[in-house]
Image (cartoon, rainbow, N blue to C red; front, side, top):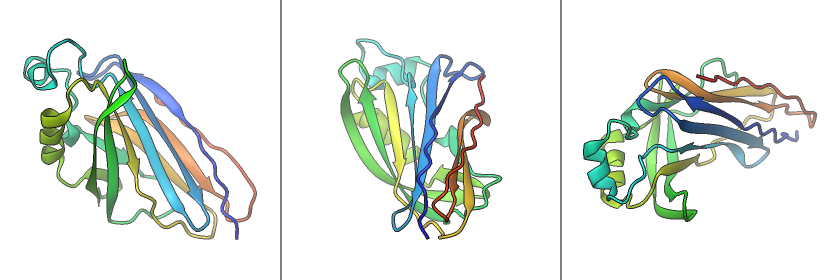
Length: 184
């Protein structure tokens, strides 16, 4: 059966946490033979200034903490594996350049996808982030069944929902679309 790609991108502004003014996006797709992919971006996670990233981290409570980020998959009828890899890019939005990139492991904790070692991700970002003020992430593909199912993904930070998408794998070549947006 042919799996159908359905991609929905939702953005919301986060106002309830220390990352006020941050823009969140999550999207995904499921394709026959290629599996399911989830990706997103978080813009404005690092306060921009002429100072180095390390100096800004020590001065600002508005710095992104990898331990507080998760992707909730509760309500999904497609299964998510217990672990996988995610590529994270730290981006300078003024120049559009990727400052640094790393591929790190993630694990499933209940219905949430979390970084396996968020402290090492924080250390990496501090050491190599330079002028980066945003990040993008892309989970490496994981298997998709050949039958109908939904993968519901909500980007969470400090327990607050910021952006969500429902990726529908019809398994029959048809298409349908569901979306949810959480605007704080």
